[in-house]
Image (cartoon, rainbow, N blue to C red; front, side, top):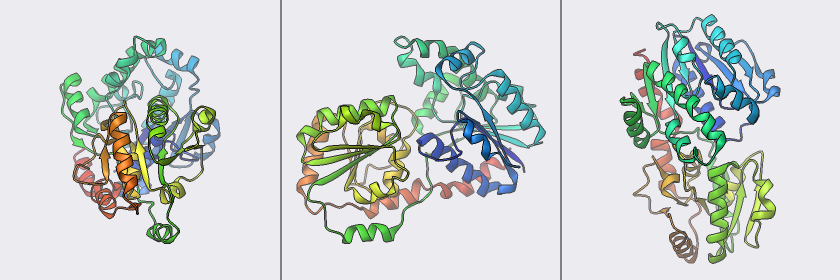
Length: 376
């Protein structure tokens, strides 16, 4: 079976965003199921330098996503690229003579409605986009203009899908609400296992931290900026702990966020060293959609964590005593200070890591997805 994988996430070059990492994990999953030689990639990128990664099984299409261009795309009913790019991707997909197409997102123009019906379509509904964009549409002219194209794209993807996949029960309910359809499969957000036990053991043998070390990992975008700013202003002045902030773009907010007990690192090539050296992870995300990849990463590293309902959405963590659900400033402050008082801190929790291996390690879904996709 030959399958085309079409994505607008940045899967080429340096991977430092959750969207790109998640998409690459799903691509790896498909390659294990069908074999490298049977999976062909159509990557729509916003970075011209990524054109160099084209090869005999990867075709790269450049789409200028500066705001003015995105607004022009919206006028033609598309979100991330022009009709010319849509035509080029469609033409390439048809030349591949693929049996199936895997859309890694529902905002993929009108390609789904233009494909011949004998080519089976699988769509990963990362989130219900019309619901995600709706809350801010009246206060944001950009989103107001995008709204019709978002709905049209999502309609095209979901209504033409032979198999629809969502991340969690929340999105399953929204899929049913808006499209009168139940998902064919709920695939939790997963990640590959990059954890190295010997590095963790070396960290545990080193001198313990004298002050509880907290870590936030995430790229600079609206929900992360809001959550981190709130956490720094409302929680950090009242806890006996130090916070390090790591993530693409956050260096832009260093002057705004740095405190005596807060250090902004921003963009780094490798976040693993920060995970190994920290005592706990904080996830103060107050709004969003889908599932959060950084929560899966924290589980992978076996890290105790303090997170909101939104950050923990879709994860089975209720029985893990070192995963603390906090939604208000008072809840964060109380939970962190109680944890800080119980020295020595457990910077690695085997039960948390075991939950990752049981539920959120990408390869564990190989067999069930192979069986599902075999039906197309």
